[in-house]
Length: 281
Image (cartoon, rainbow, N blue to C red; front, side, top):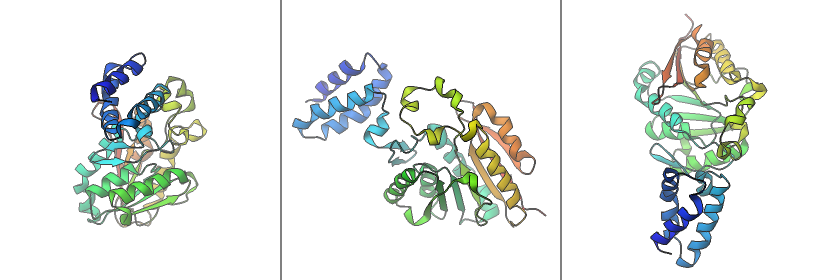
């Protein structure tokens, strides 16, 4: 099949269900893949991909790949597909790292709660060669994906992965300088408003918050961060991706004991919180 025939097949099969912009995005993935195959295998592969797309399977899962900043990461249905907002969070941390390193030194120890594919520590470790991270997730399948990503990005020696339920923790690791998280914050009642490609295929464990409490992870982080400061001698820097509709409520969990601010994303939605917790005394 020539490139023109591949494109014609894509349009013929996907036009009833997808917009022209969506099809153009799909072609970015499909064309080089099909052209890399032997001629005899192209049509069968193309038919399979189109059928998967019509079932609302995200193209990142079909190819087991997602672009995240300068990286290409493996993703599977065990992990969320990294969003542009999460990439923006990582960019903001790097942009403001001088504040972090001026108070805590260059050898930053980070902790990522709900690491999934490991996209946050992958980006930060790739950009900051002196940093180290621990990525924690309750899903062993997600951690297997993160381990593969760490190896391919080449930062496996600086990333420790742990299977654990953060909600059961009694304290934060005392050595960390940076706490980062994009935890689940969607209530089950919001599922009816979600697109099928997300609801039917992305992991509910990473999407929906336990006990229908959208602040449960943030409340736990705030509690442990405040408690930790009695034993700390240096600031704890916290960066979080948040539910834009609960920005002030989330900030207030930290504002009583930390310097906390809400930061808007590129779409002007209140999407992130930065908090700096100073040692007691």
